[in-house]
Length: 414
Image (cartoon, rainbow, N blue to C red; front, top):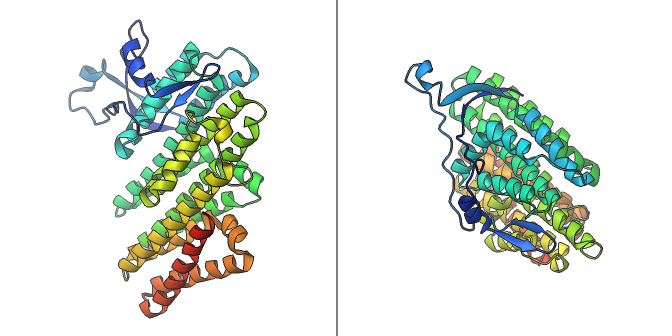
């Protein structure tokens, strides 16, 4: 994938791209755990967010700006793979060239990360830089550093895909611009598709197919000039990726919470590595849960934080917190749908409610049984159709049943 962006050259000093004093400030957010294993504490704790790199066009002549910036083609997929290949040497006990990885990051990926940080009020640029520096100087296990880089970059690619969708909707009147934004979204998705494929293999699901179907609906909507259909296709892609990240972090039996608990009785240091992977994957869905179920979100964050002793990580409780959180998210989406009745937003949030039910579908079947889950999904479809038809008389009684069932899921998942 090649995307034209503005790259600003970074002035380096003897202490590389950050002074030791700045690193001390960032590393105040890290905790030493056991034999040279550290990890970033809670995503929102302390520190300052670096200002995003300037990407506006210069009004001065190109030759006057040549010393400050250069226009380059960045193949994000290729750079990401090159960095991961170097970092993967840590798994084999080989030396990792962290300077090479840092250069790849700062010269090609950092500006993208900073853009998402500014947009989402996250601190992933600082977290990635600090992890690479800590891996280099040995204050962080090199495999942990690799996982922090890998999984946080996956979140950045995911949120950039969502950003492209937003840009497409905002520029809907310009069909060529919309098509270009959609193609870029597809390219960012392609970078993280292997993560979806792994979860499909682990859980015998078909999320890759679901996402492909979502993109097909998006393409048809663009050609038909149907903004609502575009928004619905976008939700399928987005929520299926949320399901992927949930499966990776907290689902049973193959989520990282379960793996932490399993490794903790055998190898605590490896358990810390797995805990780091779970933490980084969780960052992709943490905001959804924090907005709808803050207590559950905080509990999951705490369980994955390396300040937490791996022997105390309770995979079953992590899973239940996810289930309660996503069930509450579905309830909130349905309430929003009813409040916006008659508008496109009502249909969009009705679909979101159904998709969040699908995210925890396997868990609901375990808690309520297959028959009850089938009935729930049928009701979700009935409500969606009523929302599309603007038939409130048909939608209201179904909504009450949906909310009651989802509330029972929350109670049974305590």
